Length: 225
Image (cartoon, rainbow, N blue to C red; front, top):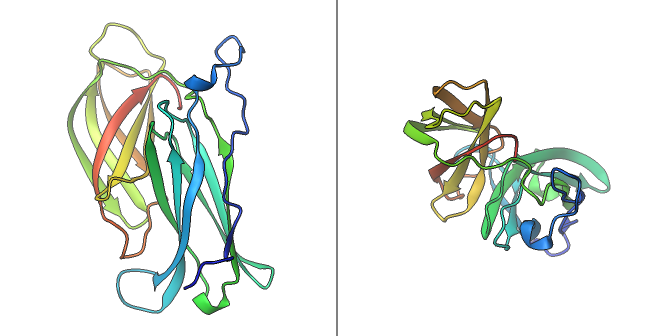
C-alpha cells in the first residue's frame, strides 16, 4: 500500500512542563524527548500468516536525548471518506535515552477502504516522575508473550533495610531488531525484603512480518515513571 499522504499528525509532544519536587522548572538537559520519526501502513493478515489482509500501522517514536523519558500515550485513528473506522491507543510507561520505540496498530477494515490514518502523541512526561531504585537484585525471571499481551514474572530482593511505600516494576520489552516494543508495569505496595512481581501490559499485537520479541530488562522505581 502506498503511504504518501495517507498518514497525518506525526510530531512531538511535551504537554506537561517538567518540574522538580518543589515545583521549579527543570533544566532541559534533564528532560527526555518523544518524537514520531517514522510511520508506515502495511498489509498483512489480522492474525498469523493466513486470512484476508488488513491495514497495520507501524509507528516509530524516538528519544534521541541522553536523558530518559517518562510515560507516553499515543492515539491512532483510521478513516474512510472522513468517517472514523477505528481508534487504537498505545501506552508505554518509560522510554530510555537514545532509544526508538516501535509499535503496531491494527485496522479493522479492508485495506482498499482506508483513506487516511492519524497518529499523535496525546500525553507525554518528558521528565521521569519516579526515582530509579538502585541495588535491587532480580532472581529468575520469565517472559511470556501471547497475542496482544506480555508478562514478565520474577522475584526481586530489595537489598536494603529502607522501607518503601511502594515499588514500581517496569519491564522493557525489545525485539530482535533492537527496538523497544513497549513496557510491562506492576506496582508492589509495602514490599517485603523479597517479593514476587508480574509486570504485564497489552498493546503488543503485531503482524507476522514484525521482528519477534526476544529480550527484556527490568527496572525499579519509587513511583510511576
